[in-house]
Image 1: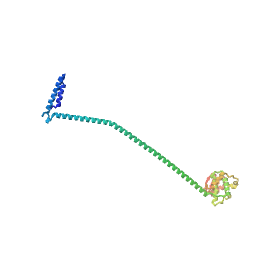
Image 2: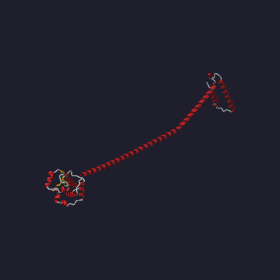
Image 3: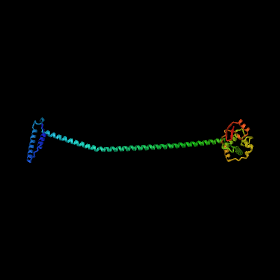
Image 4: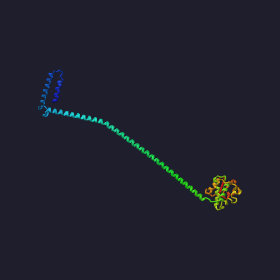
Length: 292
């Protein structure tokens, strides 16, 4: 069934479709005709039985048109709202990206700062550990040096005590005789050779098997060749001999208890035979062999 809107649209299209050039009079006539047609159409739509269910078709058309316009307005508003929301999103996205980028940069900077701080802390800790190790090594070295010095001092003290125990006190006369016999027997020997000769003389004094004085031991018959040939009286005692004799008197001893010594190249064959058959050989130093 045709609606009022469609009828009016058809009438309007009819007149628009006319290609005849109309005058003002004809235009007014057509306008009157269209107005009359519109009135007739309105009257027709207001009569019963023309619309469905006895309702006023014109009212339904108007309401339908208003509803469609409202729907169109709502659609337009929704489209505008969606467009605004889209624009807002488009505007917001760069801002969010900028904020995210700034956040990432800040996080990266914080991480780098933390890594630098950790690295610096680790470096300082290693330096402190190295310093502590060096200080500990220095303390250990100082402690070892002190202990070594203490041990050296104790050894020197012990040596002095041993010398004191073995030291021999002699009279001035015995001292001079000891200097002469050492010079005569070992004048050309080294320090140890001279001290060994003094040791043998002093060992005899202490042994109880010989006279108890240096002079008595040295001048016993047939004991020392410098006494036998008299050269003991002509020797000139050197400062080195004096020093060696003093060291022997203070207890420096290399003799292992020797009571005899012999220069095999300068001794008589009978003396050599007696030494070899009656005494115990200990060692040799230089040209002298020592026995007990």
